[in-house]
Amino acid sequence: MENFLLTKVEDIIVEEINLVKATRDQAEEFKVVLLKHIDEGSLKIIVDLHQCEFVDSTFLSTLLIALKAVMEKGGGLKLAAPKYEVDEVLEATGMKKVFDVFPTVEEAVNSFK
Image 1 (cartoon, rainbow, N blue to C red):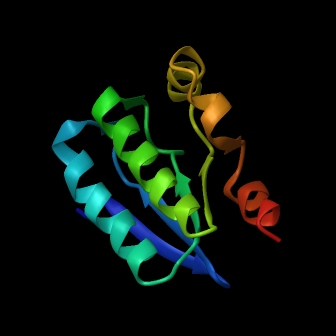
Image 2: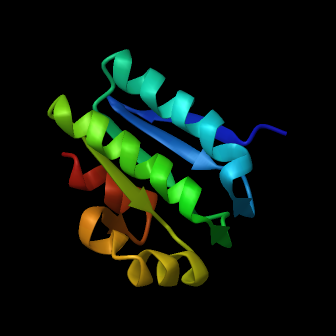
């Protein structure tokens, strides 16, 4: 099973997290995936969290690293479709003030247009 599923909507990268729990065990792999997109010039990235029921601090750190890298190049990274539990973690950690978070991937895509 692939942990991360890539789709593209025009020039927007959508990385679906294909995990119930996104933890430090997958964080490094995901960091490599995201930074590769950015290095290749993809500056509009959406992380689809609809399957995740849990994210840990290491995984959140990976998202922050990617956000910083893409913003330095004038792009953006947005989060989409977090389940209630993940949304609560984003709120409690202050990440909802850092990331644009959308209820659906479609809304996140439209926000780039």
